[in-house]
Amino acid sequence: MVPCAAGGNNANGQATVPNDLGPVTQVSVGVRHTCVVKTDSRARCWGNNAFGQAAVPADLGLVSQISAGRNATCAVTLDGTARCWGGGARPKQSWSGQPDRCLHRCSPAFWPR
Image (cartoon, rainbow, N blue to C red; front, side):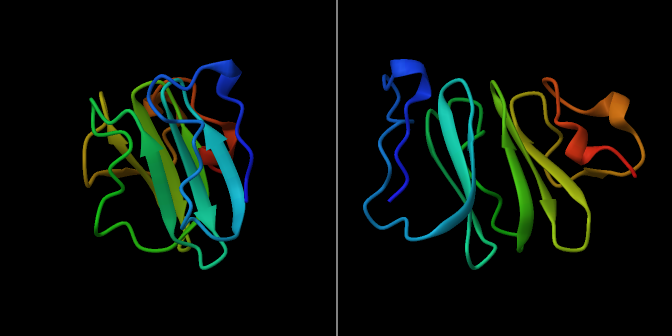
């Protein structure tokens, strides 16, 4: 089980880890939602979904990294494609080589190497 603190605030359930979550390799806590990369490389999010930030796209596929922001979430797929969804994101659009288009202080992990 992954313990979550979320700054002591659990108003949206973001700090309540789902009982059926299973093992994970990464956790990212946003303002009102939490996302993980599971050991099978699938993404899962929970908490506030007012902007679609906790609704993992059905066509996302497997991921290596995830970053929960304020009202959006970004992930890196296993093929290295950055995908973002939620408020301000352009669903089903991916960016490469354009860190200036990242949302809400994207992690440098999403920038080209």
